[in-house]
Length: 72
Image (tube, rainbow, N blue to C red; front, side, top):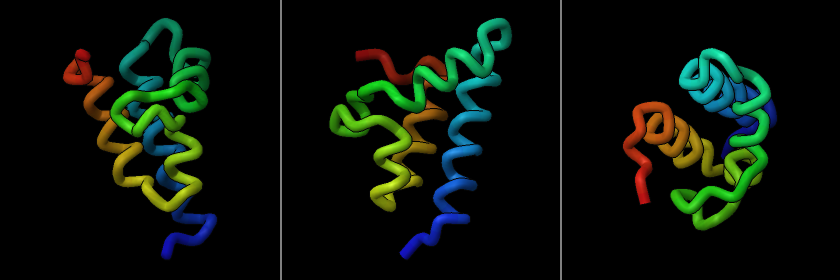
């Protein structure tokens, strides 16, 4: 089971992946992505997914989004 430190680490890693993908918008876009519904995460937000202990799925979604591999 993940503790809060692990969850914060996963959230920060996912945020960094998205912020790096959006060089100009950076943190504003990453914040919106972290809170928004995500079809790769059963329409949950990445933050709620991490809080539920599914941080690996959120990181996978962040990486797919950053590489443009999340087309629907």
